[in-house]
Image 1 (cartoon, rainbow, N blue to C red):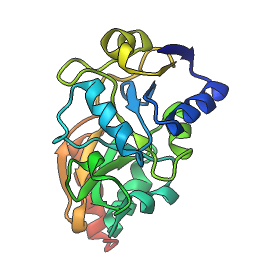
Image 2 (image 1 turned 180 degrees about the horizontal axis):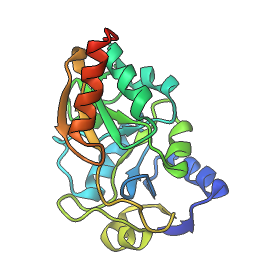
Image 3 (image 1 turned 45 degrees about the vertical axis):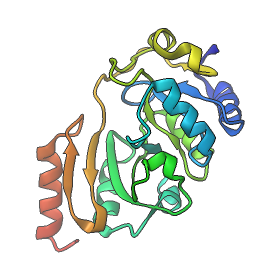
Length: 212
């Protein structure tokens, strides 16, 4: 395992690691993330083993642009696009029907995926390198506190990672807010940095203005 500073050159190296099926920890706009290539089922399984996480629990995907959304999701409702345009990049995760190309190892055999565009240069640029983005689960042992620095990642799961990008201390220790918009039905599954009241007000305005 290697710890290197988060910069443009080292992000390119991290992207190469991901292409080779390796596990990379990296800073995000929430807590530190643990990533592998979404389209590599063997790497996804390895990530679950590193975290000590049940394969019955799905992991989220980070993408680098709205253009990539259709690569990971299908039957995307207008409401999803409206929410994404308002809150991405940022700390909001959308649950949508998954694209058939996404391995079921990612979604724990479910037909939906959780996806967001992160508001952090490292996580954002790594995600842009891959057609289906990268896994964006937290870089910690399942059930243990989320990691807020490269040092904390190293303490918890350093032996299981191939590379850690050190971007300093996380600016937030809160996870993203998770919203389901499957089939256009709006439901807040977890309140995080973006508050329930803000989302409900936004969606209510869309309805009143006839935009959805």
